[in-house]
Image (cartoon, rainbow, N blue to C red; front, side, top):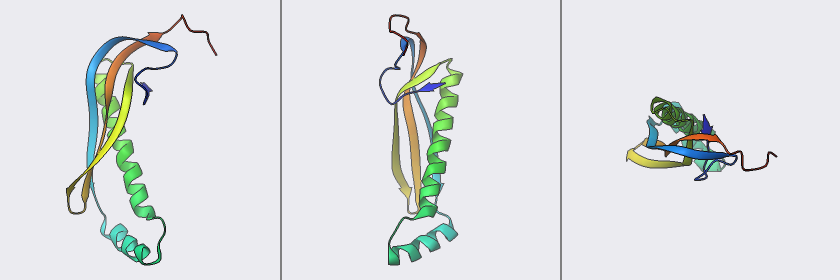
Length: 112
């Protein structure tokens, strides 16, 4: 599955559009991570527990979006974007979305 943040896929031409696909997950803070983050705010620096939480959430949302694109028979997703929203105190949604498309190699561009 090809994924691009561009609205096209270099070296390929879009031959079909399957429409919008998305994947999301809602994650909440872990008590241990929350406690450690509270301590870290006293001295400053990266909140690694939250960084890991967000990385995991983005990966899960992306995997769900890719699965949705495959179900539609797509070869690629273009225009990939991520969004986030607070759901409730201590919980956030991560959303991955883009356009599922069918592609084929573009033989009119020189191979590089």
